[in-house]
Every structure is written in C-alpha cells, then in structure tokens.
Amino acid sequence: QVQLVESGGGSVQAGGSLRLSCAASGRAFSRLSMGWFRQAPGKEREFVSAINWSGDRTDYSDSVKGRFTISRDYAKTTLTLQMNSLKPDDTAVYYCVARGNFDGTYRSPTEFSYWGQGTQVTVSS
Image (cartoon, rainbow, N blue to C red; front, side, top):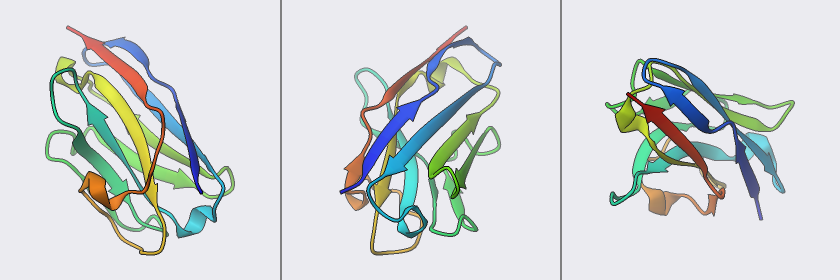
C-alpha cells in the first residue's frame, strides 16, 4: 500500500503561484510513477502532469504546459507541483496519484492505483 498526503493548496489571485506537495510513504518511492490530476465542480477528473521513476521524463496537459512544473525529491519522498501564472480555470481539487510496477508517464486516471485525499486550489480573477 502507498499513502499519499497532499498539502499546499489555498487561494490566490490570477497570475499568482502556489506549490503543491505530496508526501508518499509505504513503498519504495523511486519505484513509483506519479502524477497530478484535478477536478473542478461539475467537471470530470482531468490529467495535469506526470513523472516517471527517475524523474527524467515528464508530461503535462496542454492547459498547464509552460506554467506548471512537476518534480520529485527522493530524500524527502515528496512529489511537488509548482504552479505559476495561475488562472481562474485552474480552480479545482488537485489529487496526487501513484502507481507501482511500471516505469513511465501516464495520463489515464485508471492507470493509477493510489490517490491522495485532494487539496483545494482556488484562483480568483
């Protein structure tokens, strides 16, 4: 089992920045493919970003590319999402996700076995 605990959400004005963190435990961090999804009210869960075991491969949705950066800290077993130039459309609950066994970046929510509880991000105009 893998436990994922997100932190860092909050409220910010458009153009501002937030940094989300996800503390992982319960399994070798270096053997987890990880990522972030988000879900806005009334909308389906949406892929945001993903990263592979070694961190040398990353993937971003078109809506966040160039504004968000995903990274991982192996010493702290933490996944991070740096979000810059935030827009009101970025308002959502953000979920940290992980999967074991296979190294890669994945975009489908069904690829991930482990989910955090979510953290709210609100961007006002």
